[in-house]
Image 1 (cartoon, rainbow, N blue to C red):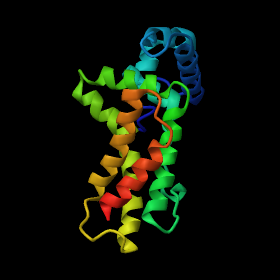
Image 2: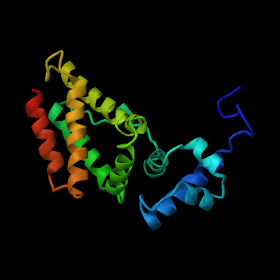
Image 3: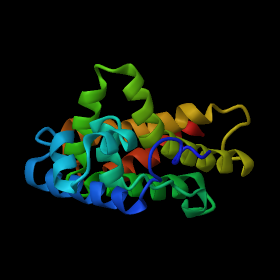
Length: 193
C-alpha cells in the first residue's frame, strides 16, 4: 500500500492547492503570527486532521505556501566560467528571493517558531537551507575543477558562509543595502582563493 492510501480515502490532490491557497490568503490578511492552522482548515473547508496530516506544523505549511517547496536545479546555476562570476549570480539570486514581498517576515516567523523545537528546526532547515547549500557546493566544486580553489577546500563551509551571510543580513536588517550581494560575492571570491 502506498503512503498516501495507507488509511482512509485516497489523497485528493486538489486539496493541497486549496489548503495552500487558503494559507496564502490568510497570510496576506493577518501575517505569519496571525495565521492559525484552525483558520486555514476553516478557510480551505477541510478537517484539521486533513491539514495536519499534510503539514503537521505552521512553519512547514507556510514554507510550502510561500516558496512552493521548489527544488533548486543545479542546471539553473550561473556558470560564468569564473568563481567571481558564479558567486555574483548566486548571491544576486538569493538577494532576489529575500526581496520577494513578505519573505523576510515569514522566514523570521518560521525560525522563531522553530527555536523552541529542535526537531522542527531540522525539518525546516532540510526544506529551506539544504537545497541552497547543495547548489552552492556545486558552484564551489566547479571552481575546484577549474583550479580556482585548491582541492580539499571545505565546500560546505563556503556555502554556509555565503547563505548564512545573506540570510542574516536580510533577517537582521529587513532591507539589505544596495550592493550587498555584490560585496558578498567579491569578498567570498577573494577569501576562497
